Length: 331
Length: 291
Picture 1 (cartoon, each protein chain N blue to C red):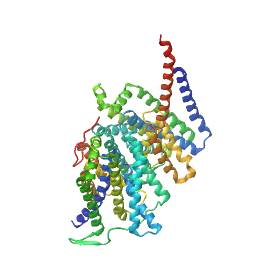
Picture 2: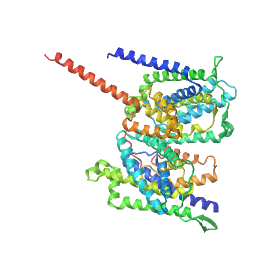
Picture 3: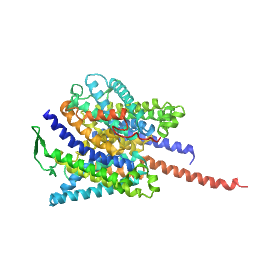
């Protein structure tokens, strides 16, 4: 297969995927649309975490807290009568700054220590959501979060709101695609592969580490801003450590360091409970087993399996081409 | 002042239990780079083994023995052979995430197949209380503290004095050299997994009568053990003991003197402060970083 046909095939697959995401929901009921919207939102948060973890190599167990910060920002601001755009600006700015600050420990400590600092932050954020009643209404939560209007076009209907979330996902995905190919993305990957070497090559590792955290976290905030009007009710329970762990598993299961990884991971994590609905409470057990088996088999996730398969086929094709070319090269 | 004495005693008791769990945690990290996110669930589970054995009709002592053996087999040997061994070569992160999945698996299995309700658990320490300086100190706190300290002392002596203990230390410090010296490193690693299983089983027997047996009870315990391990020093058994006791005291005193709402936050601030200013832990050595 030549490179050109392969690009065309990839473009075709992408187009088919987008068409499915646009057309299939027309057949879905209210609940199906809710689930798909949730998938889009969780994908955005997972894309952010993938930038921090998959590309820059910094472990974060705080992404759920940033979704929470975004959701509370949206809930508080929009129930005061302000538009969702204002909430988006506030949430992104807030998460960017907090994410930047959270990156500082990453400059000092690595791996498990960093996991625990971010884990501590995540738990602290939950305590603030629960205890600061003057701001967050505590365990009673904030009710009646309105769905936004876009240029005077109300998005209250489930289908319209789904398209809104899908468009947001599209924008975020395109942004991530661009970022990974930009010099910044290359600097992130250099950071992941070998920070010492990156530094010796003149990459400002300090700035890029903080940036990786800040950008990843602000995408968590974006997801939160969409989450609040989708659910229309915000209380502290969804934003425990469990959400952060779940987002981390989405990234790893899909394949960290692959652009499509978070989309796939979020799809499994959001849809699996629906597929396994007949098994009642068993789905978490099945999911946990699936994650363990998958990781034992392929630590780079599902896309890692695909990637290895393609690499093997390429290698085989190349060696076949070499052996075919050999007799001509010989005199 | 009298209240303070009570708080200190109960803080020492919970701290000693945290130390048991944290020691197991650091042992696994030292010998096989396993960050066990399911450590809290490992403490929750043996109590349920014992309860299941009691339900079958065994007397309490026999149920404890059964629970202990089940813990050694499942949380020690099976955990190592089935989950850790195949994943170890992939590095630290995939294994850590697999243990997160394991913690979900264990928690939901207990909830689904045993009960979602909190279960009472018989105490292995006599009930009642001791009059001391004009206040009542529960015997349970004292008994828990004494048993936990005894376990730690025995373990320390085993690691420092016995031949097997020294071989285990050597295997943890430098597996390659240990192997050259003829130490069966693989078996030593298996021993640390068994010791961890025994420690969490003991912690389970000691703490469950106080906090009841519930499928979620591992969450706070696991977090406490991580914090204790890091605050004390991740690469030292000694550190885990100091960290556990400090954490137990801070936790109990903070609940009374600071705020009940933010009780959970104080250990976290302690954790962040230690990581930022003294990453090797209060009594730990600085770890040489490999890049």
